[in-house]
Picture (cartoon, one colour):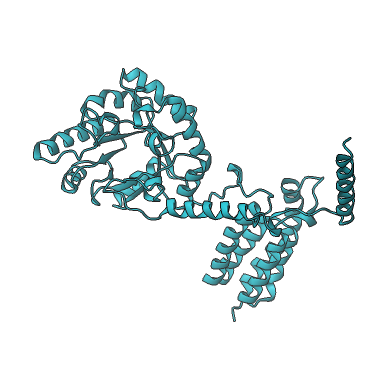
Length: 416
């Protein structure tokens, strides 16, 4: 049995006494004059939460929690749990606080008639990842988990899964828009997809790809395009392809205060000139050239560099020579972090995928099977079932509808 000392019980008593002072402030902020407390959707949850705490803590001081529960205020039930965690010094109370915090976020969405969340309803539990976070992970030798996203749902998934850096890559041209290559996507299309991802992905650091033709003409053009991704698409950094030849362009962008993620090795936008999608830097000469490009980008101000499709020893060699993170994709596990195309790693296609892609799911098979089941249910009138339809408020109205239907049938049969 968990007991409370005199000091601890006094702390709970003070919490209860503060109820009167908090009541009007909380009512004003959470419940407008026209709202009805008894219809607040989380009330049953608070009752269950207080009951659970009563069982675990076995303490008569739980009335403090129940008092706040009756106020129907989320912040108060959480504050009460936090106080009890401190007062009792028990991990069980802390565990329940975590359950309440998570379940509370879910209950808000569950109260809506639609299952589609708005950006405001998404629970943002993780601290925001910033450049300082990325640098801290790098200094602590903790791998940086990066992943692409291309729309609102994929942004939500990446955020919920704990991804550090979300890249809205121009790969979406092929995997989301069906283009033959990445060079066909336009700036307007990239802006649209970046905005969608930003609405769903709140915690990760967001980087948008500069599309082909929007940065190669001059550093001034690159800066203008980068500003559009930041200002119009809510990105926090930009990515561009190229090595030494792009150093001046990177310098121009970073000088304006925009973080830049470099990209060397296999650069898909230049795949034609590289002879296709081929592994790069497979010789010592190629490795040295890759290192020079990486160092030039680092000196120009890149906060990190993507190494794509290079031998693992070469990627390790370049990573050890730099003082900024490397993000590998087909470059071995000795890079500072990894990135994959989300639709590839989820197995969203039944076509060829690169050797470096590990499929963590078979979304294509799962989705195809689910849709086939839906088509079957529709054809056999198994969907929608009773649990998927709405009822009328008055059953007598159903008889009235049937009478109207009979009347209409008589009129039709009379030829009028």
